[in-house]
Length: 81
Image 1 (cartoon, helix red, strand yellow):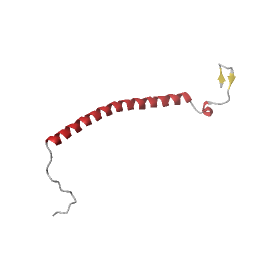
Image 2 (tube, rainbow, N blue to C red):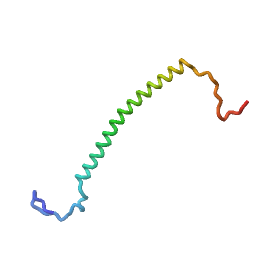
Image 3 (cartoon, rainbow, N blue to C red):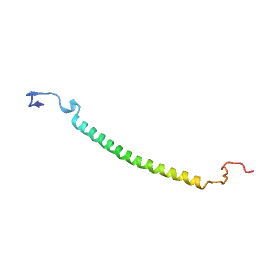
Image 4 (cartoon, rainbow, N blue to C red):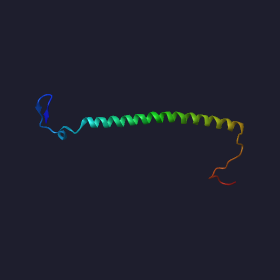
């Protein structure tokens, strides 16, 4: 292959050099950016879910305190007396 910058020729071809490294780098960069963007959205969604979960847990605790359950429950495998 002829190199116009140096005016020399090279006997090796692209397949012998290992392919197209810039395309491989671009593909890896694109995948990394897609994964990074996906985690940023998931973390914001995760924060929202956690806040909703905490609010629901607080509401359930208040409801159990206001209306306690005094019923006796039998275990499913308990021997009848």
